[in-house]
Length: 296
Image: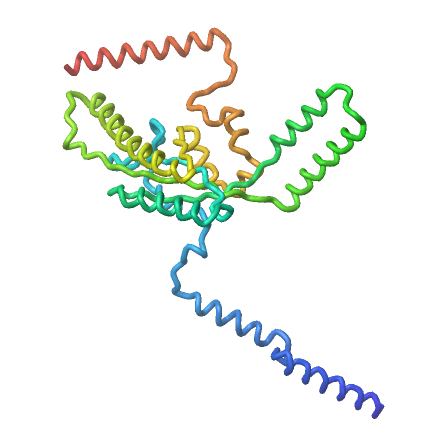
């Protein structure tokens, strides 16, 4: 019994010594609870920063007042319009010193020439290999007299790609330039609201497209190409911004294929139903015309 007590005392002493050497608490969990309480107390009253929030918050703040996508532009409240162009980057660090210097000078020259605000927006998107894999499967199925070794190699390659994408997904960075312009309606004269609306859109697009062309011509000299985003591209941009996790499984192209972007019902209808709808539309138009005549 005495020997057991001695062994227990030695083991306790070794344990205490090891905990002191590792600078850890002798009683497990005591300091951990304290540190957790300290962290929670230090977080009280602290405002959330961008690191505490979702990455898309920056995009929400940038386009928080978007009303509609119209004529390849975001239309915001107070007749403010936004045009976005995607930038095709260059392999800057693979270039020589003189080539890098040329890119820097070109970019600085463009910035010095403009007198309006231009923002940069970066968006990380999931690299989807489903289309290349489907193309490989199609080519293998349609290939004639394909060697058995080549077929097995292609099959194993497809399996490796599918496994690689499932286990370790990759992301690519998309780069965009954001041009903004606000229309002052007091300077625009029109006889009707419809004419005023047309002039506002025309003026906004003309100014923003001029700025886009200026950037495109300047950055082309540095090997960076600019592509204007269309209405569909802007919708895709919003989709990836607000559905970062869902976009991996629910792909934007599938949303478009399933006609979920349509403004009208696109299901198959019989001829009688289509004629009935047309008749109702014509009746409503005639009623609106009569009401306008009575009002005038």
